[in-house]
Length: 380
Image (tube, rainbow, N blue to C red; front, side, top):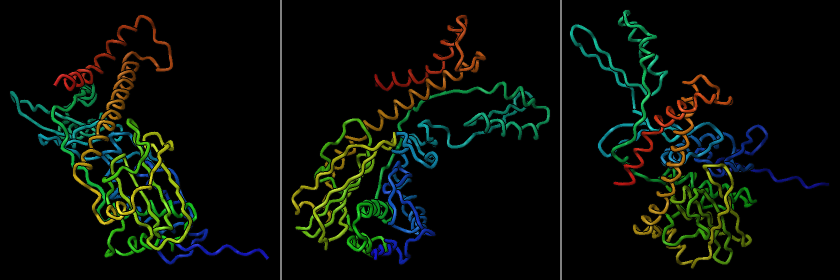
């Protein structure tokens, strides 16, 4: 008689996992570009609860990175982010890397017995809605004429953004610990062998079983020009420890103690991804560090300011280069699209020779603000 498989229990609640509450849980949250999923880990209810309580906070903490680098998600685009320049201008950073005013503006001014109306909108559709409201208020306003006078302008920031990048905390930290826990589950380690992770995820009073990891660099083959996320686990039966390592956007780095009662095999597993392409990355995490150093990191002694600043100075140029490349491509594509529309030519048609120069003129006029802004940045 064939022996039946033992029932699987949700890692976060007493529910037995069945076909009715089955879920495929992203190991690294899809909100920041993760793709790999695991099954037999948590139930659908806990999956949804984690998404609302933990993953949403984590996604918000890394939203600037996601928008600046163009993270590809399976479920829609990253939401807009409210940002502010050093001089106090409020803007929205959008999923394509572009920025726009935080809200439309509308003003009325009387000049020589007439009302002069000025509208600044973020999109033509938004302007259309505002103009419709103006027509209701002032029936003599010609809607079509107003829309014909609609002008699209592009400009670039004169003042840098004021950014404050923080990660972790009660909810973001739990999301990162769950990621290491999920990878352990994916490779057959039973939930009960990750008791420290379970205690922390279930009880808000439990001391976090992780430490920020900047004292030593555990990534052996750290890339110099690519974005990555990675999660790795290592079983160290000699020290009765099951450790996890999680790193997001090449910068947010934590070492997790999943268990301090581990009696399994000496194992190593990892999963890494380039979130800007959705393609798995080749990242190797090396846990072969003096155990006393690892213990010190877990005890909270793993974030010296100089090492953290070193990590920030390493990743920011990579992010800015990704953002520059995306903006350059977006500007050229949008300019070409406008040129084709203006000349009444479909993009997949051959451009008539007599329209070549006009096409080039329109194209150059549209990309000129981008070129000027980058020349200013280069020489200042």
